Length: 98
Image 1 (tube, rainbow, N blue to C red):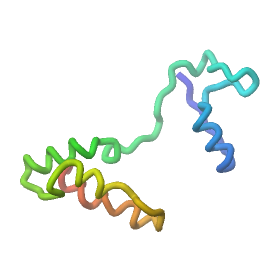
Image 2: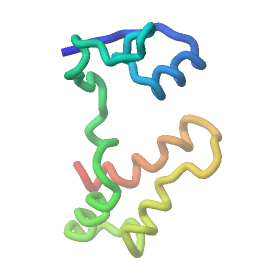
Image 3: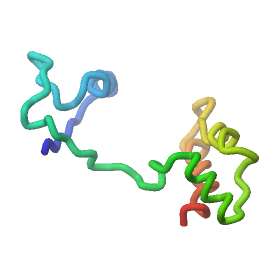
Image 4: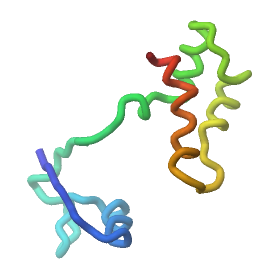
C-alpha cells in the first residue's frame, strides 16, 4: 500500500490531483509501491449518493424535496460563498442517515 503525505502549494496540489500522487515525477509512470493505494480520509456521511439519501428519507417519512433530482440540485453549491453555506446541506440529510 502507498501512504503518501504531501505538503504542497495549491497550484502543485491541483497538478498532483490531475496527474496522480503516486506517479514518478521523472518518468510519469505509477510507482510500483503505489499501484495499490488507499483513501485515508473520507467522511461516510459525505459519500452517500443523494439518491440514496432521498430514498431513505421517503421510507422514514422525512420530506426533503419532491424528487431525487430536485434534492440533488439543492445540494449543489452554485456560487462559492463561505464555509457555513457550503456545509448547510449537511443539516438536511443528517436526520435521514442518523
